[in-house]
Length: 313
Image 1 (cartoon, rainbow, N blue to C red):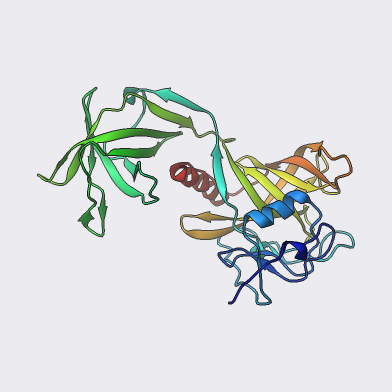
Image 2 (image 1 turned 90 degrees about the horizontal axis):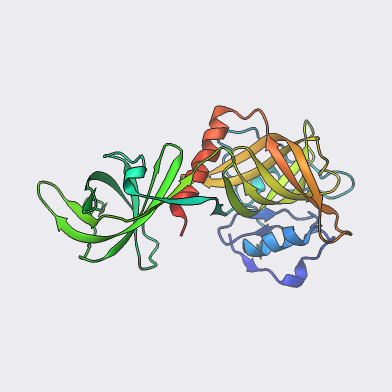
């Protein structure tokens, strides 16, 4: 599918999109005819890449959650994107950290860890913790790709991350020695401090993406800006007519989880709402608490949070 660069003047607040808009990965961000009524939604579209084409992207497979059928928007507005047309939301971690010693962690021998080099390269490798000598050395399996060992030099700094129970751990360590017998493993210098992040039910991942929001039990949807997400709920910049405290709603969005696009359509209740700084804005910032999530839905959200934490720069 050929994509053409989108001109900024082609999109205007309050006017219907003249054609469907995609991002650089050919994910549909906005369907033709959908009205953009918020600066934040417009900014989110620009952040995700603005390209256009008359062809339509094949929707991602809704793997586990209720699919909201494509529907017209509330009131007299043109239709908004269907659940499977929503863009893939990108994430960054927001949370509270603490510094602990290695002995204060609950890491166990055999735990998988993620390793990356301290040189800005994006490559990540999976290793296992195989031992430690207090205040002297930590031992991990040698990073490999397709059965071949990744080259490491003595003194090279590695960034390591691991998940265990309700905590995510991150630290840096330098290579002391690479050993080949009786199997390939690496001696690292003993880290003086480990950053520990508690993974709570309300642990938030910051987002800047497009979602759709509708009243509970109704098929109509309006686009909104998704600011963060946790297993407990989400923060939205939503149209005023939907941002009513105590009202039942349904939020639809898409996330990349374990190299697969998952479509979420989750019930919730608006617990709080506040006015925008611009008092003439038709949008409000509201907190939505998810309700009646299935075990699979909770696990998918938790996995997304885990992976975001591991992939954090």
